Amino acid sequence: MCWSARADPVAGSAISGAGIACLARVGRARDLPVAALPLLLGAHQLVEAAVWRTGGGCSPAATAWAVITLPLLALRVPAGVLLAAAPEGRRRLWGPPAAGLATAAVLAYCLATRPVTAEIRGRTIGYGVNVPWMPLVLTGRLFATPGSLPLGGDRRLRTLGLVPTAGAPACSALWRLEFASTWCAFAAVASLLVLGWVRRPPATPPVT
Image: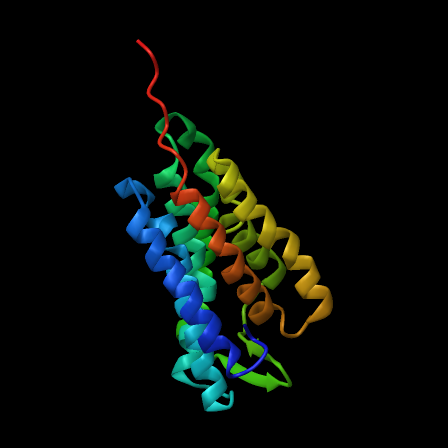
């Protein structure tokens, strides 16, 4: 994943392929946003491969990477979980989309008005985005993205949310300045758990 210019294209292609398989196997239209998550995160790794090729700095690839990482995922993941949830369980799921909307608004404004920089640091990439109130914004993003998945009521989605949540402090401790890049790579691999989710047996209708 973010470990070399060669690793990102390979990993991104593999994860994107898994995303296509998820879309091919999905059985309900309302599951499509979650089923497409590996495809989006695989494409995200391919965008980072373009950042490697540019050698860092301010570039369209770095900006595209940040747009996916920050506002897009903050909006898309909680909305997808809300759509996929059973109607009777949606009441508890409105918190993450609300947090995602507020967080994405701040992040989108920052990306529209301030440059995104990327710096190659050995086998990792550090991204720079000038975001005010960063601890608060990061908390909102974490609640909206991996935080929404355990609330979906599905065991596999709960696991998908817990794995990147547990990986966040590890990535922060090991690669403090490169946290965003390494954690997104970790989340991309974790998204392969969606394959198991789309293969789950259909719910049994209640006996009347």
